[in-house]
Amino acid sequence: MECVTPRRGLSLVRMSLTWRPLTLDDMPQLAATFAAAERVEPIDEHYNAEDLAEEIGSPNVDLPTATTSAWDGDTLVAYGLLRRRDAANPAHMVRVETLVHPEYRDDAIAEHLAGWFEETGKQVHAKAFPDAPLELHAAANTKQRWLTDVLLNSGYEHARWFVDMRADLASIPPAKPLPEEFPLVTYEEKYEALTLRSRNETFADHWGSTDQSLEAWRHLVVGGKDFQPDLSFLLLSPERDRVVAMVLSAFFASDAAVTGVKDLYVSHVATDAALRGRGIAGALLGHAIAQAKAKGFQRASLNVDQDNSHNALGVYERVGFSEHQRWGGYVKPIPT
Image (cartoon, rainbow, N blue to C red; front, side):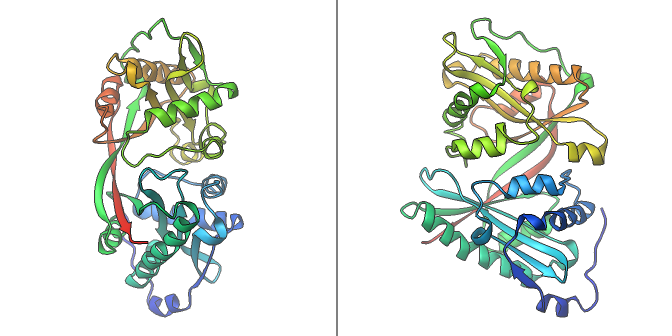
């Protein structure tokens, strides 16, 4: 791990930083800041400008009012973003996203961002769900020690562990047979509404999850540039009017360009509540990664809540996944 020491006289530079909302034209500079952070804290996330434009340009982010960025001349050295949710059940769990260039990390920037998140969070909340409680939700990889300290020192409490898991497709176990009573199909656009309904129903009891709107689902998942419909599979009800299980996948070309590894990211695994315990999720996931292997993918990855009430971590281990790294989930209730 590289050790970065702030430049001499940097405190004077920080006094003259310019703060303003992000625009989509800023994405090349933001990608450079992410790359600088990755060199110091390698968390295996490699974004290019197009990736960031899609993530930050989502319908749940209002660029002029819910983003901020710090500039040292033409260099983007920090950003903050608040992502509103599509529902508040019962709390409005606004997502906090931030990154500071390793050479610019100090108490002044930390305090500025922490204060901005709280004040702007109240404004975002008031426009969306003013009658619900407000919580700020943030995540930090265990390697992101500075960010973790900033969150804890700003009053956020650690609430959850999330595990990044990986499977080497050269050594995955044979896929288990799928139940014959449920038709297997690959994803098509005609299943968009059915998959969203399944997602919202099956994730309803997941910690930190809320219903997702069709607009956000389309932008961030099934309509995203990295979505892999040919490696996303659904099991339908016998009447073909419901999705009873699904595995949705994506491929991040920007990661592969840096690592040289073709990795299939499994973004969603879901099974109808009435069918849990039958091994259907594991069988469908096994089928998906076997198909990925046949198409030349070398690895598969996913992220799971360690304390998932459906014992999902154990399901994934049996299919061939193992822990790679961890993220802490941090929460701060905000009085409104």
